[in-house]
View 1 (cartoon, helix red, strand yellow):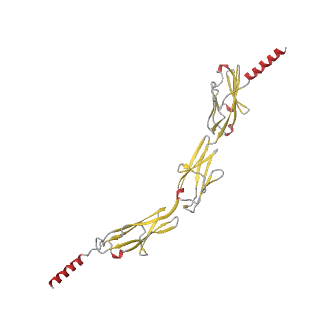
View 2: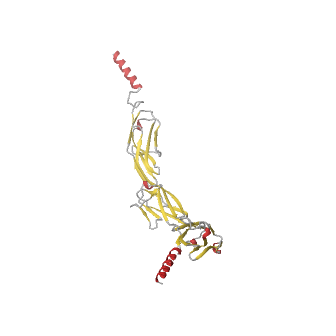
View 3: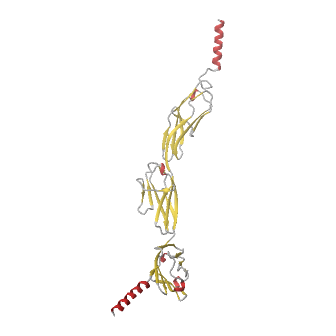
Length: 330
């Protein structure tokens, strides 16, 4: 009696081990967008051919979605217009997703010889939309201004990414991010901070990017006068003034310390005479930074000869010739 009992117990345990549910391999989770579709598909081929299957069951949590048994497919009313089923692969397609569809999904398959089960999850997200970047309303001045840039948007947002000129914007002593990464503070600002800033709001099913251009005003610097320093009588002279500045600088001119009426980057003398000799100074002004910078003094010498080389005039030559003739006669 002892031997048959032991044999029976062993066979019973083996049967339990073979007949209990085996695992159906799904991805750990699926992602979906509100209003979109999702397909719950197996990672690996399904168990035996459908001819051996007498029951399979899809559930959402504890709620039955559909049941297939004896060749008859029964879909619960709550899902009737929202699901389709591939009876060969057991793939369930769920349509017109809502946030309430997030949760655990289970598939049970019974065949003549074996039971199978598998489980996965679904997370439904609202699509990201209406992404905007909001920056400072005032003009930015180098070395003085601090810019606060805020990234806003709607939807299910799981990450925020910042870029500047298509390169990652990283934290530093002058670039500080808020705890939720939705605000960045930059300052004091320098000219290198000018450029295009991008913020991307993202979730597993959608993303959206907003852009904002910032201009940091600076200068004027490197104020220089270009032009001739020595000319002859009756010549045309053009002096030009340049400066490094954002926005572009405006200019005024002084001659021998006295203001002129010239307010462009060019100072023109159409017909030189000795009174044009002297020192010229150009002043560059940036109306945003409210800075004024003078150039170095530019000397201009108008010489007596028309060629600018200091030669004798025609009258002087004639006078010398007459003088020489008189001396010969004497």
